[in-house]
Amino acid sequence: MRALANFIMRGRVQAAVVAIAGSWFPLISPATVALVTLRRGSLDGSMILLWAMLPALAALWISNLGPLMPVVTFAGLLVTYLAAQLLRSSNSWPSTMMGVIALSCLLALLTAMAIPDPVADITRALGDMFAQMQAEAPEGTAILAPSENFVVGLIAYVVAVSSLLSVLLGRWWQALLYNPGGLQAEFHSLRLSPVQALACFAALLYCWLQGGDYRIWASVFGLPLVLVGVAIVHYAVKARAMGVQWLILFYLGLLLVSPLTALLAIMAVMDTWIDFRSRIKVRLDKSAGE
Image 1 (cartoon, rainbow, N blue to C red):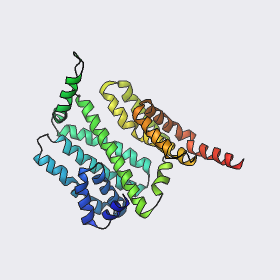
Image 2: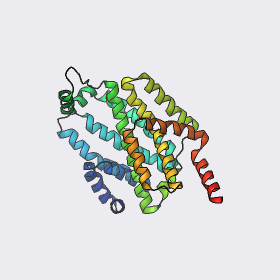
Image 3: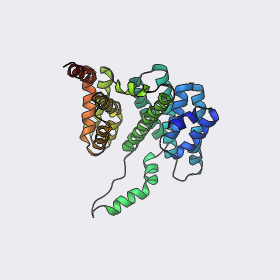
């Protein structure tokens, strides 16, 4: 990864090549946009953004699957670029995360307005998968196609997750080259303000209580809380020198045990007042002094 980041920062041509070729691999293309924007500013970042959009533009021109997927790709790249700009200017991960959520929701709604029937488009794109699910389902079970509310929420979720991960990857590359250990320090100290935490939690809770297709929106608004919860776990593991195997077990649990995500969100809200990391540090200092 360090070699790739070093290649990207050699010049605009190298960055453009990775931005185009990286579209075949998860996160590489938007992370390239993020790295260039974080290090060199908005002008260079915007130029690499345009190169990164070329594969999606080509897919929009030649693909018969409809415009939804390329448009979502455009949205993800744009949000990543704007988030990297915000992080560069503010140096604040909480503000960047809130900006990503707001922009992702806005662009998802604009996508639904720009594409006459996003439900039909995504159903057509996923037609084979739905057909296979229906064929494998027990007799008498109907696999319902997604509603428009679900599709718009899914777009917002995909854009938000990909953008946050891309900015994190770009920031990690930047730290590898110019500030070793910088991302770890930033991530371990990640903490929302009370207003930010309560706003995310209130939106998450409202959407969850609505049930049905609204629960995908709960996942969108809960992303900053979950990321803060993950940061607390990372800090605890590092502070206690527990070893990377505990993080592996944690991420496996996160994938397999759904309630763990809710616990992380609740922990992130509580952290705005309790400050778990300070308490962990105090306990460790006391133990070291005994």
